[in-house]
Length: 108
Length: 112
Image (cartoon, rainbow over all chains, first blue to last red; front, side):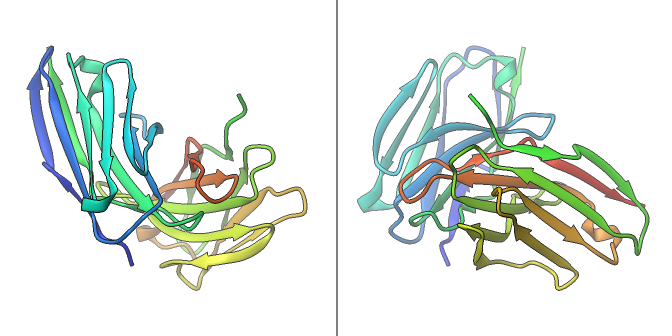
């Protein structure tokens, strides 16, 4: 099955800093999604991005499908950005395979 | 916009009891997925249904079963509960190939 690796596993930043989270996947996929899991456990969809670049406010994501990686950029971090960020990939409407996540802590 | 609805949100059961979780997918979504997320873990795929037929199966214990009904809602039945079944259970739905998979808010199961 698809293997998904995320880095770094943990990231502690000062409020206002920028960050880049990386996701590597092992096979050709046509579904790649980024999620933010908040402290209450909710999985919030950030991006559906099997290829290309998308932006939503302070967040943006880029997936280079041919090189099997995706990047999530967070600019001007706020304390509400804290939580675990998951990358998940799959093929067709088959199951998503999740990475082990990046735990982001933003310090005021 | 309508989201994936899960119930109950919180459930406490004793060992060896049975629990049933319900999921109402987004209207017109034809695929439902169930995931289990243990403490400090990433979500793990359990089972999925496409048009009310089981389409894929992951590491779901034999004590667990699931089905999707004619109105597209799905239920996950867990029997002979063990302490290790304590987890956050997610249901998700999608409308087919090349589309976003949307997750519900999850059901917290605690087995004591």
